[in-house]
Image (cartoon, rainbow, N blue to C red):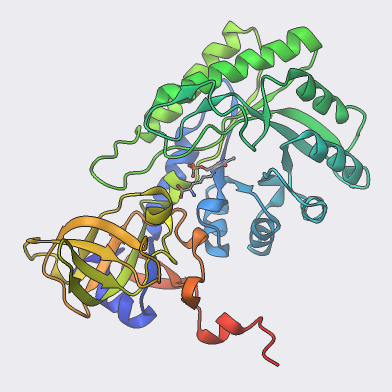
Length: 420
Ligand code: LLP
C-alpha cells in the first residue's frame, strides 16, 4: 500500500473520500525553506513571492507566512484568502491585467504592499484611487520583454502582443505611465516586473530575461533620467511530472539568477537594490497527489480504459495542455505493471483523459489510483462541469492528516441557487 506523508492511501480514501487532493506538508515546507534560504545574496535585497494562483487556500497562505515568503495575488479572491488567513498584507503583491476598481480599492483597504501595474489605464485609475490612501503603496510596472519561454526552448522577440504588461517596444507609453505616479505622495514607483512563461527548463531563458531587463532599466535611466531600484523576474521554474522532465535544480537556478543580476548591474553601471522572483508551480506541484477510486474498466478495439471517479473537473491540465502525469495503483504497489491503460475521467467529454498509455497492474473496481505532481494548477483550476463536486484537500505529515479544505457536498453545490 502506497503511503503519503506516513499515511496509508486507503486510510486517507476511507476517511476523506475520493477524489482527494493530498499534499505532503513536509515537502511543501522543505520547498518553501529552500527558496527562502537559496534565494539570498550579499549584493541585493531579495524576495521570494509565492504565486498563489498555483494553489491558494488559508492553510497554504499560513505556511508561506511561516517561512517569511511573500505572496503574489491576482484577484479579489486571492487577496481575500490571504487577508482572512492573517497574512501580513504588506508582503502581498497584487498582479493582473484587468484589476477592477473595487479590487484596487480592496488592495488599498487591506494594505497590500505592492501593486504591479499592467497598463496605462490601470496606472491612471490607481493614481486617482491612491490619492485617498492613508499609506504608501509600492508600485511595479509589468513589462513584456519579448521572450517567450512556455516550452522547452525560449524564443526572443516572440509574443509582442501578449495581453500582459507593456511591450518594451512601447517605450513612450512606459515613460508616460511611470510619470503618472510622479506627483502622488501615496505611491512609490520602485521598478519593473516581467514573467516569461511557465514550466521553464532552460536557464538561459532567465539569463536572456535578466539581460533584457537590466538593458531596459539602463535605457530608462540614461535617456529619461528615471531611476529604479527593483526588478521582479516572475516565476516559471519547472517541476518534474514524468521521467522526461529535468528541471534546473533550485540551487542552480537561484545562483544563475543572482549571479547574472550582479553581472548586469555592474556592466550597465546601475544600482538595482532588490531582486524578486515569483515561483508557484515549483513550490507546490510535486508535493501534491490526487487519489481516485477506480470504477469500471472497458476495452475498445484499440484501447484499454480504466475509469476513475474524477478527471478533468479536478485536473484540467491534460485536456487543456496535453500535460503528462504519472500514476500508480496505491493498493497494488508490488504487483507487476503488465497492462497498458488509458486513464479516463467520468465527465461527458471525450477529452477527459488523464493519462494515455500507462503501464499499471490489472485494475479492478475499488482500486485506488494515485496521480502524482498534481499540487499546482489542479485544485485552483477545478470546475463544476457535470456538477461534479470539488474534492477536499488534506495536508499529511508524520503519519497525521488534517483536512485544509472540506470536500464539497451536494448542498454546497446548489447552495447559492434560487430554488423557488
Ligand atoms: N508570476 C506571474 C506574473 C504569473 O503569471 C505566473 C503564472 C507565476 C508568477 C507563476 O508561475 P509558475 O512558477 O507557477 O510557473 N495554468 C497553467 C500555468 C499558468 C501560469 C500562469 N502564470 C498550468 O497549469 O500549467
